[in-house]
View 1 (tube, rainbow, N blue to C red):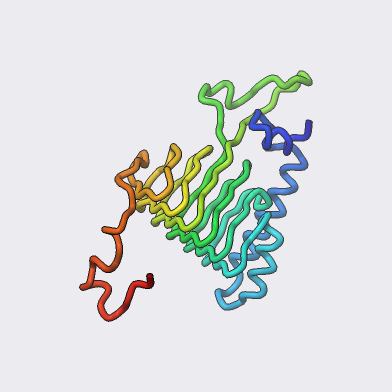
View 2: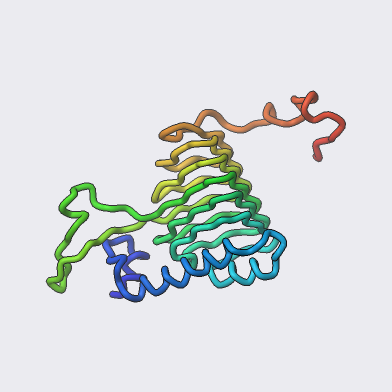
Length: 212
């Protein structure tokens, strides 16, 4: 079984495998290329992202700098906004829905390493080789989600549609749709409801209007 297939199967794999290293090297170099562009070089940026990502919906904007690990394992929906310093360690699959907004310094991680120190250093493979192995769990983020500054999404987490994750949160477990969640570790504070409408904040809404 190829190491890429092991990642998808959720079992131990060798990140130093030559095929995986080639994928990561290509993506890391493309990250650098993106980070050297100016913000208004939109066509150049779009061309680089098309080489990095598995999928990128229309209408998206990523401020940069970026740090994608594999890149090809990440799929992003339409109208995405990613602020400064977006990091996606996408050993396993990462999916981000439509109309999502990320604040600066958001990090998504999928790899998991053994807890026992000796097992982190070496595991005996089925072929009799001693290697450093890890495994990875996919991350899924629904539509219309807002992630505040410096949010970290840990391996295996699913965030439902229409969620707001407070700044600085470390999300270690699934968050149900329509939730405001925050903290370390992140927990659901409450459901988002009509009381959260800007209609209830006329001093901030000013002379603007909420669309029905």
